[in-house]
Image 1: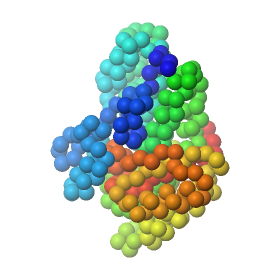
Image 2: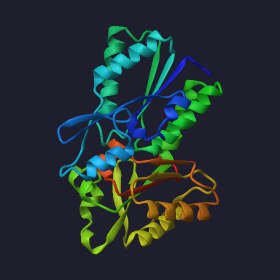
Image 3: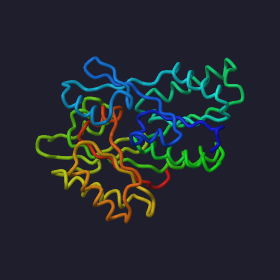
Length: 290
Protein backbone atom coordinates (compact mmCIF):
# COMPACT_ATOMS: atom_id res chain seq x y z
CA UNK A 1 0.00 0.00 0.00
CA UNK A 2 1.07 3.55 -0.70
CA UNK A 3 1.87 4.87 2.78
CA UNK A 4 2.56 8.32 1.38
CA UNK A 5 -1.17 9.00 0.94
CA UNK A 6 -3.24 9.48 4.10
CA UNK A 7 -7.02 9.14 3.72
CA UNK A 8 -9.29 10.94 6.18
CA UNK A 9 -13.03 11.43 6.50
CA UNK A 10 -15.53 12.38 9.20
CA UNK A 11 -17.92 10.12 11.09
CA UNK A 12 -20.91 11.34 9.11
CA UNK A 13 -19.71 8.89 6.44
CA UNK A 14 -21.59 6.06 8.24
CA UNK A 15 -19.04 3.44 7.15
CA UNK A 16 -20.22 0.15 8.73
CA UNK A 17 -19.05 -0.34 12.29
CA UNK A 18 -15.54 -1.73 12.59
CA UNK A 19 -14.63 -1.20 8.94
CA UNK A 20 -12.19 1.57 9.82
CA UNK A 21 -10.13 -1.14 11.57
CA UNK A 22 -10.05 -3.42 8.53
CA UNK A 23 -9.58 -0.58 6.05
CA UNK A 24 -6.88 2.06 6.27
CA UNK A 25 -9.22 4.99 6.87
CA UNK A 26 -8.86 7.73 9.48
CA UNK A 27 -12.33 8.77 10.70
CA UNK A 28 -12.63 11.99 12.69
CA UNK A 29 -15.71 11.85 14.91
CA UNK A 30 -18.42 14.44 15.28
CA UNK A 31 -19.74 15.10 18.75
CA UNK A 32 -23.48 14.86 19.40
CA UNK A 33 -25.40 16.72 22.12
CA UNK A 34 -28.41 14.94 23.61
CA UNK A 35 -30.09 16.32 26.73
CA UNK A 36 -27.04 18.51 27.50
CA UNK A 37 -24.65 15.55 27.36
CA UNK A 38 -21.92 15.23 24.73
CA UNK A 39 -21.25 11.94 22.95
CA UNK A 40 -18.60 11.13 20.36
CA UNK A 41 -19.98 9.36 17.31
CA UNK A 42 -18.62 5.83 16.73
CA UNK A 43 -16.71 6.02 20.04
CA UNK A 44 -19.42 6.63 22.64
CA UNK A 45 -22.50 5.78 20.57
CA UNK A 46 -23.44 3.03 18.16
CA UNK A 47 -26.29 3.89 15.79
CA UNK A 48 -28.63 1.68 17.80
CA UNK A 49 -27.71 3.40 21.06
CA UNK A 50 -28.30 6.75 19.38
CA UNK A 51 -31.77 5.68 18.18
CA UNK A 52 -32.76 4.74 21.73
CA UNK A 53 -31.49 7.99 23.22
CA UNK A 54 -33.02 10.13 20.48
CA UNK A 55 -36.41 8.43 20.67
CA UNK A 56 -36.55 9.02 24.42
CA UNK A 57 -35.43 12.63 24.20
CA UNK A 58 -38.10 15.33 23.92
CA UNK A 59 -35.78 17.66 22.02
CA UNK A 60 -33.68 17.26 18.89
CA UNK A 61 -30.07 16.02 19.09
CA UNK A 62 -27.53 18.47 17.69
CA UNK A 63 -24.24 17.84 15.94
CA UNK A 64 -21.14 19.91 16.61
CA UNK A 65 -18.94 20.77 13.64
CA UNK A 66 -15.28 19.79 13.54
CA UNK A 67 -13.31 22.97 14.17
CA UNK A 68 -10.09 24.16 12.53
CA UNK A 69 -7.74 23.36 15.46
CA UNK A 70 -8.64 19.67 15.25
CA UNK A 71 -7.85 19.65 11.54
CA UNK A 72 -4.57 21.46 12.17
CA UNK A 73 -3.62 18.79 14.71
CA UNK A 74 -4.55 16.04 12.26
CA UNK A 75 -2.54 17.60 9.41
CA UNK A 76 0.51 17.94 11.68
CA UNK A 77 0.14 14.28 12.63
CA UNK A 78 0.07 13.27 8.96
CA UNK A 79 3.17 15.36 8.29
CA UNK A 80 5.03 13.70 11.16
CA UNK A 81 4.15 10.28 9.75
CA UNK A 82 5.71 11.15 6.42
CA UNK A 83 2.59 11.65 4.32
CA UNK A 84 3.14 13.34 0.98
CA UNK A 85 -0.57 13.72 0.22
CA UNK A 86 -3.59 13.96 2.50
CA UNK A 87 -7.01 13.29 0.98
CA UNK A 88 -9.75 14.61 3.23
CA UNK A 89 -13.36 13.83 2.25
CA UNK A 90 -16.00 15.70 4.22
CA UNK A 91 -19.73 15.97 4.77
CA UNK A 92 -21.72 18.32 2.53
CA UNK A 93 -20.57 21.90 3.12
CA UNK A 94 -24.18 23.02 2.67
CA UNK A 95 -25.08 21.29 5.93
CA UNK A 96 -21.96 21.88 8.02
CA UNK A 97 -19.17 24.41 8.48
CA UNK A 98 -16.76 21.49 8.83
CA UNK A 99 -15.51 21.78 5.24
CA UNK A 100 -14.79 25.50 5.63
CA UNK A 101 -12.99 24.83 8.91
CA UNK A 102 -10.73 22.30 7.19
CA UNK A 103 -9.92 24.80 4.45
CA UNK A 104 -9.07 27.39 7.12
CA UNK A 105 -6.81 24.90 8.91
CA UNK A 106 -4.94 24.15 5.68
CA UNK A 107 -4.49 27.87 5.03
CA UNK A 108 -3.21 28.44 8.58
CA UNK A 109 -0.56 25.73 8.29
CA UNK A 110 0.37 26.76 4.77
CA UNK A 111 1.02 30.32 5.94
CA UNK A 112 3.06 29.09 8.91
CA UNK A 113 5.07 26.79 6.65
CA UNK A 114 4.20 23.71 8.70
CA UNK A 115 2.82 21.74 5.77
CA UNK A 116 6.07 21.90 3.83
CA UNK A 117 5.70 19.96 0.59
CA UNK A 118 2.75 17.90 1.84
CA UNK A 119 -0.38 18.42 -0.27
CA UNK A 120 -3.76 18.52 1.42
CA UNK A 121 -6.68 17.76 -0.89
CA UNK A 122 -9.95 18.79 0.79
CA UNK A 123 -13.02 17.44 -0.98
CA UNK A 124 -16.58 18.60 -0.42
CA UNK A 125 -18.65 15.45 -0.92
CA UNK A 126 -21.83 17.50 -1.56
CA UNK A 127 -23.66 14.61 0.13
CA UNK A 128 -24.20 12.68 3.34
CA UNK A 129 -23.65 9.29 4.97
CA UNK A 130 -22.48 6.27 2.96
CA UNK A 131 -22.88 8.32 -0.18
CA UNK A 132 -19.35 9.52 0.64
CA UNK A 133 -18.47 6.63 2.95
CA UNK A 134 -18.65 4.29 -0.04
CA UNK A 135 -16.44 6.60 -2.11
CA UNK A 136 -13.87 6.72 0.69
CA UNK A 137 -13.77 2.92 0.82
CA UNK A 138 -13.25 2.81 -2.94
CA UNK A 139 -10.50 5.43 -2.63
CA UNK A 140 -8.76 3.25 -0.05
CA UNK A 141 -8.72 0.37 -2.55
CA UNK A 142 -7.13 2.66 -5.12
CA UNK A 143 -4.45 3.73 -2.64
CA UNK A 144 -3.63 0.08 -1.98
CA UNK A 145 -3.42 -0.49 -5.73
CA UNK A 146 -0.78 2.21 -5.98
CA UNK A 147 -2.79 4.88 -7.77
CA UNK A 148 -1.70 8.51 -7.50
CA UNK A 149 -3.40 11.05 -5.27
CA UNK A 150 -4.47 13.00 -8.34
CA UNK A 151 -6.24 10.00 -9.91
CA UNK A 152 -7.98 9.21 -6.63
CA UNK A 153 -9.18 12.80 -6.24
CA UNK A 154 -10.48 12.65 -9.83
CA UNK A 155 -12.42 9.46 -9.01
CA UNK A 156 -13.95 11.07 -5.92
CA UNK A 157 -14.99 14.20 -7.77
CA UNK A 158 -16.55 12.10 -10.52
CA UNK A 159 -18.57 10.04 -8.03
CA UNK A 160 -19.79 13.12 -6.20
CA UNK A 161 -20.88 14.71 -9.47
CA UNK A 162 -23.21 11.76 -10.12
CA UNK A 163 -24.33 10.39 -6.74
CA UNK A 164 -27.96 10.88 -5.68
CA UNK A 165 -29.55 10.19 -2.29
CA UNK A 166 -33.20 9.19 -1.84
CA UNK A 167 -34.56 9.42 1.68
CA UNK A 168 -37.82 7.98 2.96
CA UNK A 169 -38.75 9.58 6.27
CA UNK A 170 -41.42 7.84 8.32
CA UNK A 171 -41.26 10.30 11.23
CA UNK A 172 -40.74 13.94 10.24
CA UNK A 173 -40.18 15.30 13.76
CA UNK A 174 -36.38 15.47 13.50
CA UNK A 175 -36.30 16.53 9.87
CA UNK A 176 -38.70 19.42 10.39
CA UNK A 177 -37.21 20.74 13.61
CA UNK A 178 -33.58 20.40 12.57
CA UNK A 179 -34.21 22.53 9.50
CA UNK A 180 -31.46 20.67 7.61
CA UNK A 181 -33.81 18.62 5.43
CA UNK A 182 -35.76 21.63 4.26
CA UNK A 183 -38.05 19.67 1.95
CA UNK A 184 -39.63 18.02 4.98
CA UNK A 185 -41.17 21.34 5.96
CA UNK A 186 -43.42 21.16 2.92
CA UNK A 187 -44.98 17.87 3.98
CA UNK A 188 -48.18 17.99 6.01
CA UNK A 189 -50.55 15.29 7.04
CA UNK A 190 -48.05 13.06 8.83
CA UNK A 191 -50.81 11.80 11.07
CA UNK A 192 -52.70 10.72 7.96
CA UNK A 193 -49.96 8.28 7.01
CA UNK A 194 -48.42 10.37 4.23
CA UNK A 195 -44.79 9.33 3.67
CA UNK A 196 -42.54 11.59 1.58
CA UNK A 197 -39.81 10.45 -0.77
CA UNK A 198 -37.08 13.10 -0.68
CA UNK A 199 -34.25 13.48 -3.15
CA UNK A 200 -31.03 14.96 -1.79
CA UNK A 201 -28.85 15.99 -4.72
CA UNK A 202 -25.91 18.28 -3.98
CA UNK A 203 -27.29 21.17 -1.90
CA UNK A 204 -30.97 20.71 -2.75
CA UNK A 205 -33.64 18.62 -1.03
CA UNK A 206 -36.91 18.04 -2.85
CA UNK A 207 -40.04 16.06 -2.07
CA UNK A 208 -40.45 14.11 -5.30
CA UNK A 209 -43.24 11.74 -4.26
CA UNK A 210 -45.81 11.36 -1.49
CA UNK A 211 -47.36 8.01 -0.70
CA UNK A 212 -49.79 6.69 1.86
CA UNK A 213 -48.03 4.01 3.88
CA UNK A 214 -44.49 2.64 4.05
CA UNK A 215 -44.77 -0.01 1.34
CA UNK A 216 -46.26 2.46 -1.13
CA UNK A 217 -43.45 4.90 -0.36
CA UNK A 218 -40.84 2.23 -1.08
CA UNK A 219 -42.57 1.37 -4.36
CA UNK A 220 -42.64 5.05 -5.35
CA UNK A 221 -38.99 5.58 -4.46
CA UNK A 222 -37.82 2.53 -6.40
CA UNK A 223 -39.80 3.67 -9.43
CA UNK A 224 -38.03 7.03 -9.45
CA UNK A 225 -34.59 5.56 -8.82
CA UNK A 226 -34.84 3.02 -11.61
CA UNK A 227 -35.57 5.84 -14.03
CA UNK A 228 -32.53 7.84 -12.89
CA UNK A 229 -29.97 5.15 -12.06
CA UNK A 230 -27.11 4.42 -14.46
CA UNK A 231 -27.55 0.74 -15.39
CA UNK A 232 -25.01 -1.66 -13.95
CA UNK A 233 -23.73 0.72 -11.29
CA UNK A 234 -23.73 -0.05 -7.55
CA UNK A 235 -26.41 1.09 -5.14
CA UNK A 236 -26.13 1.58 -1.38
CA UNK A 237 -28.58 0.99 1.46
CA UNK A 238 -29.02 2.87 4.74
CA UNK A 239 -31.07 1.32 7.54
CA UNK A 240 -32.45 2.64 10.83
CA UNK A 241 -35.33 1.14 12.84
CA UNK A 242 -38.01 0.44 10.22
CA UNK A 243 -36.86 -3.11 9.56
CA UNK A 244 -39.83 -4.41 7.58
CA UNK A 245 -39.78 -1.50 5.13
CA UNK A 246 -35.98 -1.73 4.87
CA UNK A 247 -36.11 -5.43 4.05
CA UNK A 248 -38.74 -4.73 1.39
CA UNK A 249 -36.54 -2.00 -0.10
CA UNK A 250 -33.56 -4.36 -0.31
CA UNK A 251 -35.71 -7.09 -1.85
CA UNK A 252 -37.25 -4.79 -4.45
CA UNK A 253 -34.05 -2.95 -5.42
CA UNK A 254 -32.14 -6.23 -5.68
CA UNK A 255 -34.83 -7.59 -7.98
CA UNK A 256 -34.92 -4.46 -10.14
CA UNK A 257 -31.15 -3.96 -10.42
CA UNK A 258 -30.09 -7.61 -10.44
CA UNK A 259 -27.61 -7.06 -7.62
CA UNK A 260 -27.68 -6.57 -3.83
CA UNK A 261 -26.51 -3.33 -2.26
CA UNK A 262 -22.76 -2.74 -2.44
CA UNK A 263 -22.99 -1.57 1.17
CA UNK A 264 -25.65 -1.88 3.85
CA UNK A 265 -25.10 0.33 6.85
CA UNK A 266 -27.00 2.22 9.54
CA UNK A 267 -27.79 5.90 9.74
CA UNK A 268 -25.38 7.30 12.32
CA UNK A 269 -25.79 10.01 14.93
CA UNK A 270 -24.70 12.97 12.80
CA UNK A 271 -27.08 12.13 9.97
CA UNK A 272 -29.81 10.73 12.21
CA UNK A 273 -29.96 13.94 14.23
CA UNK A 274 -31.47 15.52 11.12
CA UNK A 275 -33.12 12.63 9.28
CA UNK A 276 -34.57 10.98 12.39
CA UNK A 277 -34.51 7.39 13.59
CA UNK A 278 -37.21 6.10 11.27
CA UNK A 279 -35.82 6.59 7.79
CA UNK A 280 -34.44 4.66 4.84
CA UNK A 281 -31.70 5.97 2.60
CA UNK A 282 -30.72 4.68 -0.83
CA UNK A 283 -27.85 6.02 -2.91
CA UNK A 284 -27.54 5.56 -6.66
CA UNK A 285 -25.34 6.83 -9.46
CA UNK A 286 -27.19 9.13 -11.82
CA UNK A 287 -26.02 11.37 -14.65
CA UNK A 288 -23.06 13.73 -14.21
CA UNK A 289 -23.92 17.22 -12.95
CA UNK A 290 -20.42 18.73 -13.11
